[in-house]
Image (cartoon, rainbow, N blue to C red; front, side, top):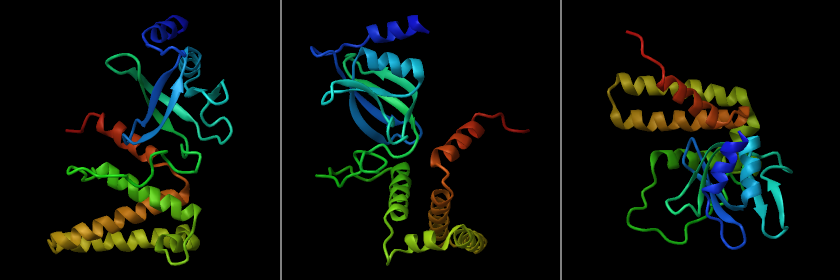
Length: 218
């Protein structure tokens, strides 16, 4: 293990301060979580422990992400860019990454949008899930999502049952417009249920990835 760690460190082109920028990305969703800086020691600790470490430029010390909050970043893969002077860390997040309690440090309004700004399906699902999580942390009196959290699991589960029935009816009626709307309602309530139950979406994506890799029955 030590030899492989040193070989990995040797491939990185650190700057004159001995640092390299590291982009942190959710391995399951592709969401960019944060940008930090690493030195050789941070890389070693990350590879040896499996938890992402950085070098703090302000405090001038090594630190593990989540060492205080518990919201750690579990390393899935580390890769350099084509020049070897910037790193991409694919991770499995254990809770929010931003110090403000947001999932991503880039969970901010865009300063500008280009002509090709249509979000992907994954981005839409993640955006909806982030708003749902925020409504749980910061309830709004006039928010339907906050109302569901106040009512609890039983109410949310009942809504999923109702929406599931409406999806079936729309499908049997061959009503594509209604089916799309009812399916969206079902997905939304499922995301609310996962948040209320404290189940990370990554667990669901992991199950789907595992099933996708299985041989299908004849």
